[in-house]
Length: 175
Ligand SMILES: Cc1cc2nc3c(=O)[nH]c(=O)nc-3n(C[C@H](O)[C@H](O)[C@H](O)COP(=O)(O)OP(=O)(O)OC[C@H]3O[C@@H](n4cnc5c(N)ncnc54)[C@H](O)[C@@H]3O)c2cc1C
Image (cartoon, rainbow, N blue to C red; front, top):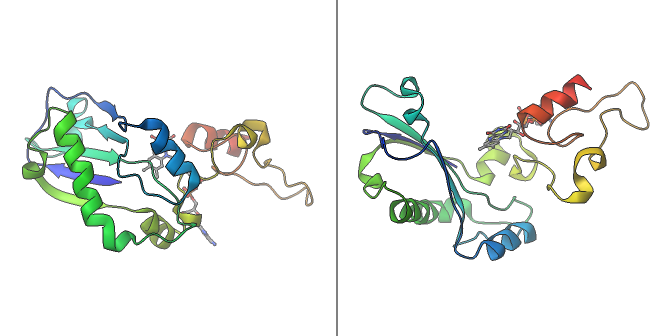
């Protein structure tokens, strides 16, 4: 994940855009196999300043960039590769959007890898979206909110019924 502070606003770029991998099937397979960090990655870019100018100082804007990738079950040298990976992601954005001079407009930057999520955020395997969204782990088939053995123990959050993402997590709390 990248948070970027820019000294410009890309007014013609939309709030949300998704740049799909050239070979999307391969990209998803690599993520699901949990071993390969896709070099042909998909990228979500959020340019929220076009909608709400208050999220950055006047004349500036922010971008939030999310690249779906693998968890930390199998060792990946994130510290060793993250600079090169960041460059690849920026290459893709510069080539496929109207932000062709993006690198030169960055004034603030923060990158968070799965290893950072694990170590700095105490997120199990750095998997911020928790269990896979496969059919056998979705909705009713996710771990239930009332623990089966101790009936006065309740589980909430993205790893439980009904699933990850804030609206669903609030539902788990409500249940
Ligand atoms: C980059 C990104 C973008 C996202 N975008 C969206 C979005 O647009 N919309 C949306 O709905 N969802 C989004 N999500 C998903 C959503 O943020 C998560 O599903 C949600 O935050 C998970 O909430 P949770 O309470 O289950 O777990 P968490 O928010 O991970 O909370 C678990 C807490 O437990 C703490 N903890 C861990 N171990 C221990 C321990 N042993 N003792 C005490 N505390 C511990 C952790 O530090 C953490 O604070 C996004 C997630 C990410 C990472």
